[in-house]
Every structure is written in structure tokens, then in C-alpha cells.
Length: 177
Image 1 (cartoon, one colour):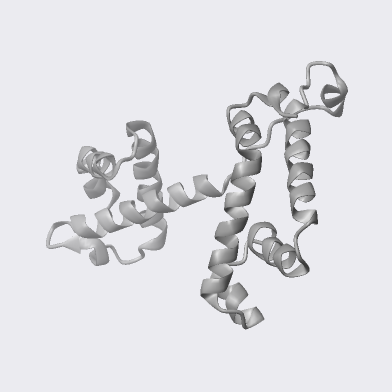
Image 2 (cartoon, helix red, strand yellow):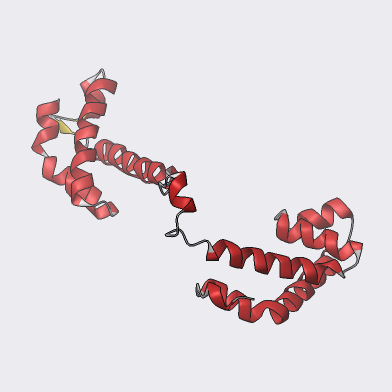
């Protein structure tokens, strides 16, 4: 079976490249496919179509392996490696953290004068990340009322913090006051 699979080696690579896979990764996936089919398929007749390999079966296997590899890559989180000494050194610039805290305190100052209803709604939507429908369902308050309130909160914050937020997103942290 492996000899018959290897005859179409270039075709298998082309199939993966057509899916959007890089050539180097396609070569690795094809090798993995050989191993997978050799170990998992006990009856070679399952992947044979007459005297030749069932190309659709191999294509489905390759496609599934490729998309599975993409999902695995997305789940990997990369963390910057720094020693704790680096954080205390003068090379570490914590101006982004300071700017974030300044904006956060400005938001706290703005919301401190709001009613309990507005504060709670602000917390549910912006801090906890609940959807408008979930808030409406849980609080028995109309969806339109909640939507209007959220739009007002956004407008108030946008008017008050627009320059500082632009500086933050442009990474001009020293301009934030």
C-alpha cells in the first residue's frame, strides 16, 4: 500500500498546496499521512479503488490533517520570556501600563457620578461582557432601553476620552494625562 501511495507523492503535496498549505508544511503532512494510513488502515482494500489508490479518501485525510494542524497552531499561545530582573531594569518601559491605569481611572471618575442603574448596566455590558439580550433577559428590562443606555455610555466616554484613547492606540503613552 505504501508503494502505491508514494507513486502519487507529488499529487498529495499539490492537493495540500491548493488548500493553502506551504510546501514545506505540505511535505511534512504527507509524510504524516503515510504513517497514519499505514498504522490505522488494517485492510488496504478500504483505500483502494480498483488497483489504484482512492484519491478522494487520501484527499479527505490530508484535508482533515491540514485543518487540524491549523487549529492546533491557533491554540498555541506565545509568551514573551523575561526574567523578573528585566522587569525592574530601566530597559522595561511600563508607560503603557501607566497609560492604561490613567484611562481606567478617568473612566472610574466619569462613572462615579452615574446612578446605580447606569453603573450596574455599564459593569454588566463593558466589564463582564454580557450581551444586550442576556442583560435584558436577566434584568427584565427592555432591550431597547438597555441599547439606548449603552449607546449613551459610549457617547459620553467617547466625548470625554477621545484624545487619550487615540494616543493610547497610537502608542503615544507620554501624551496621556
